[in-house]
Length: 355
Image (tube, rainbow, N blue to C red; front, side, top):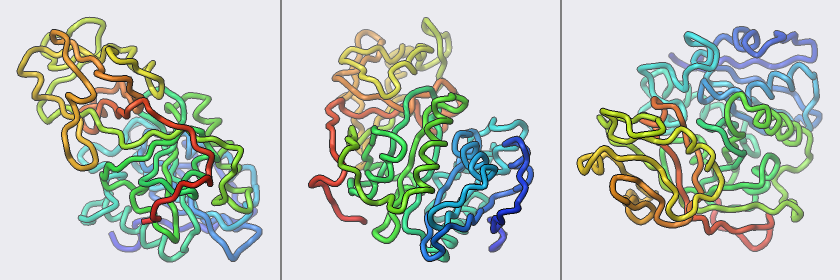
């Protein structure tokens, strides 16, 4: 796969699009870049959606926007990398095609496999079109409110996130995600709209996309839009070979059994002593880790045991809690950050280097 890893489509005002999102994805056929001409042809903004094939809100918003025939304020380039994944076996079933890598872990070498080549081509196209910013739209693996994720604090990051949500996570975890490549010439943010299929998530994506496309300046902070910031989350992961189950009581054969209603804490406060799940025994302790951006395991700083019950050791903000065993095992069960978030008015005395 050479430079055809991503199909480039220049959208014309007369372009006809399928009525349904599934029909639209079949029209595209494979990873695509759609160029929507704007009123100001001297500037470009970028959007990415469907890096994960099971996250529908962003591509639904894009499909709706295309069918509206709206003209954006500046040229809008829209990446849809996960078309084949989203159509594999059943619509929006797979995060990534079984046997392949997670596309949003491929934005660093190696590039040899199909996801790597699509990611590499996406980066090449960004260099060719030189957009002033990029928003990467996702859904969370479980239910919950919308939030943004950025690689470092910077007022343009916060202005972009504020188009969609008032919750912002600043992470030092580096996994090979697109958002980690944010640079001075092109700030990049991730927006997690909420759970796939949730009408609220679809509305977040649609309204945010409209604001992003229509505004003259999306990088200037709005001092009226306070953000709630959370810093340096850890990922609660299960090590390879560990067994996970969901249930209202410990499941025989599982190293960790998680209550099915744990999702209710997604981006809510989990007080000290919040029940996370049952461990099967002392050997199951080796199944868990909670590493920070420096690679240090923070498990027993943030969590504690009471018998074989895993509890929070301090008030935490939990997010990206998933009820899907496959995602929990291949990625992580949840993210956790200390509850000591703080409000910030975008643009008020808060800058670090734009890396």
